Length: 262
Image 1: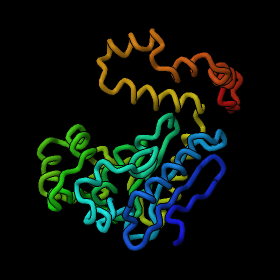
Image 2 (image 1 turned 180 degrees about the vertical axis):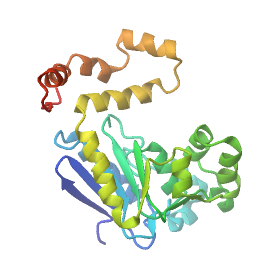
Image 3 (image 1 turned 30 degrees about the vertical axis):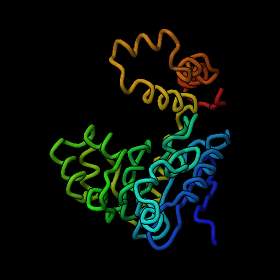
Image 4 (image 1 turned 60 degrees about the horizontal axis):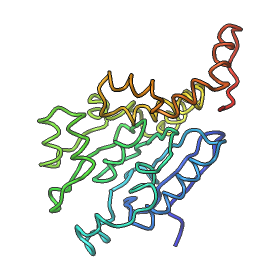
């Protein structure tokens, strides 16, 4: 069997392609392998941004492999999908680096839900996203948790209850995607976004990501209290770093900063 995960190192950018013809559906072994790949990304200090895309032009991912789903049914929910959960990164402990999803085609079911765990989403113009779970006798978990917090209630309900399909432009309009570009420009657009992230200090990006996650369910006053207590570890580390000094010095000296990541 060929490896369903292709990786390319492009400087500090780690490009990951899910390539399981015909529809880039994901099963447990593939998800576990993706967890290993994203753990490699997390642990390699030379890598700073990951781009996840799908092989081909039609499917980003059709979600959970229906052959596996048909054999285990709802019992598959409790399966071991690897250290980072389904698709390898949404639940990966200690991943404080950004992930860009470059959606090259249909994102269906879990293939749509995984976008909610990404830091950035860039879509090809022809991409189409939907959640068909209710028509298959189940209901999405992540989609049910998160989609109503992003979309207007009536639209979220239509997507969840009735399988409403969202175009790439609709996803951008409602804040589910950062940009929509022609299909042949997708990876260039994702790399351009990654390049802009790379101009920021690594610890600043990590601190922002961790603080956003840890403060998601806090009030503003709780957030201030947490910062003062040091409850956001990466924020404290960033503030005391050499890069915090380097950034201000570079601005005063009118030069580009040289980030050390410490």
